[in-house]
Length: 397
Image (cartoon, rainbow, N blue to C red; front, top):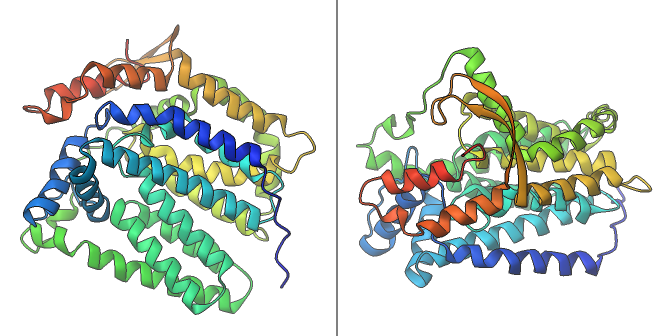
């Protein structure tokens, strides 16, 4: 079968990517970030590298990311893991462009810019968090599975997918979605290779979590989480509000305008591998977030799935104005925003009130909060890190 012709590389996008990386790099100097888990991740990494002991940062652990953080922190203190996240972000962008080029998208770089322009992507790319590490490995698995139709390619994709799960356990659901999406290809060989990749990922993932299992006294207690649920309507409310704050009010308007084109693209899900993977990824991510509507970084897989769908829906248009507008709207959201909903209790909301308050954007806010206390992760206790976390929320006043 003849592969779709790849779009030519536009050097202007390469320059733009370098500019974004250089502009974001100074954020890596402002401590490990505002995420509540950064201190535990750094301590887990130190335990692995310096003591040879494994202490999960939180259930069920993230052994691949924690070990990498331990090495990078030993080499470059807190800047090292942050630069590792920046490298993971760059790898994710490059792999997504390669994947879209392979699928014949005319403007792959513009579609991937939708991901890179998101402020929560930029925050994750300069923080000691595992979101982009896992997504980069997952995207690598998708590219290998799609472009290497051999048993070796299936095994290689499975190894990458297993490492992605080792970076972030919830990525197992994205891997399952990828396997299902690829197994729906019409060829029997594609289905078998998808199953082989899934089986390989399962084996690698199980092996990687053996240290977590042993650290919990060889019991399944290591997999238990302490994230509570609320009533159905409260859960849905948190889910919808955080979805809005993830893309921002400006991009939300653009996405509404793009719905007709997205709807047409979704009609091709049976015949189009890219649409199928994008749809499954976005749906799986949204379902997980409905159960755990907690951190904004949890929505990054939704963003990737959405970008794959938008690539098919809008990137091939003669003038992809909506795609360009979505990139611009998210860049604007990084600098300025408008607060539309304020929760009654920011850490355990059961309701909220409508408002209209101009505010600083997500990136500006995160930089300011990090700069105020870059060593908050060191404690003592969690009060300082909690304060930084509260400061960086998109609805913080």
